[in-house]
Length: 335
Image (cartoon, rainbow, N blue to C red; front, side, top):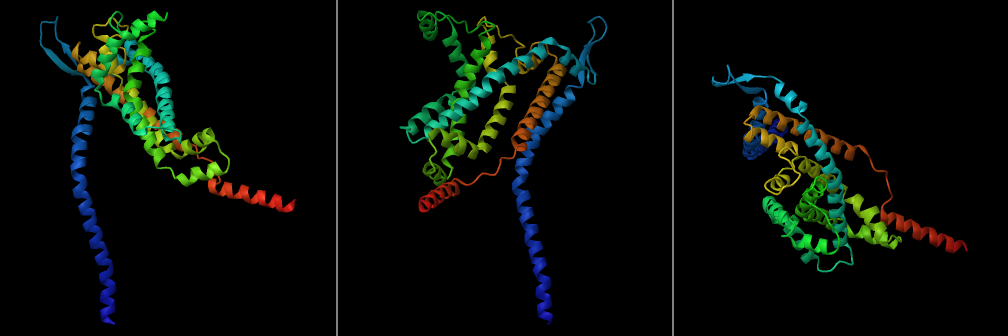
C-alpha cells in the first residue's frame, strides 16, 4: 500500500521535472534569437522614436552653438505638414496599384504554367526566372537605367524604329519604369514560392477533379489557387511591406539621369534627404516612424481581410466525383 502511494506521488513530480527541463532547454535555445531581435530591431526602433522627439536649433543669430531641444510631436507635425512628404504617399499609392496586382498575378500565372502538365523544361525556366532576383537591387537599377537611356539603349532604339516613342524618365514614365524594375527583380522569387506551394498539393485531389470533368482552367482557379491561399496571402503581405519601403530603384533614377524622380519622390527618399542632405535627423526619424506605422496598419488590414472571410464548406473533389458516378449509375438502373 505504501509503495503504490509513493509511485503515485512520484509520477506528477517526474512529469513536472521533465516539463521544467524542457522549458529550460527551450529558453536556452531561444535566448540568442531574442538577444539579436532586441539588438537589431527593438533598440533601433526605440532610438528612432526617441530621436524623433528632439530637434536641433541654433541660438542667437546663428553665431551660437547648436543645441538639441525637446520638440515633442513637432517633427511629426512638420513631416505631415510638408507637401513633399504627403505626395510621396500618393506616389506609393499609385505604385502599389500597378505593382501589387502585376506581381501577384504574374507570379501566380507563371507558377500555374510550370505546374501544368503541358510544361516542359521546368528546371530551366525556374532558374531563368529566378536569376534576376540574384542580382543586387542597385546593379539591377543601373542595368535598367542603361536600357532606358536614349541613344544608348538597344531597347529604346528598337522601339523608335517601330514607331513607339516613350520617355522612361518623363513624369508619366517614371512610375512605370520603377514598377518594371521591381517586377524584374521579384517576379521570379514569388513565382518560386507559389510553385513550391503547388507542388505540395495532393495530386489525388487533382485527379479526382479531372475525373469529375473539370478542365485545366477550372482545376487551376477553383482547386489549385484556393489550396495555396496561405502562400498567396503571405506573398501579398510581404509585397505590401516591400512596396512601402521603395527606395533603391527611384534613388538610382534620381542620380544624374534627368528623370522626373525627385529626391523626395517616396517617403523613404524624403527621410534619407532630411537626414543626409539637410542634417535634420529628428525630422527623418519622425518620417521613418510614420512610414513604419503605415506599414504596420496595412499589414494588419491585409491579415484581417485574408482571415475574415471563411470559405464555404465544399465537398471534397473525391466525394464529388464519387457522388456523380453513383447518381449516373442510379439513372442507368432506373432506365
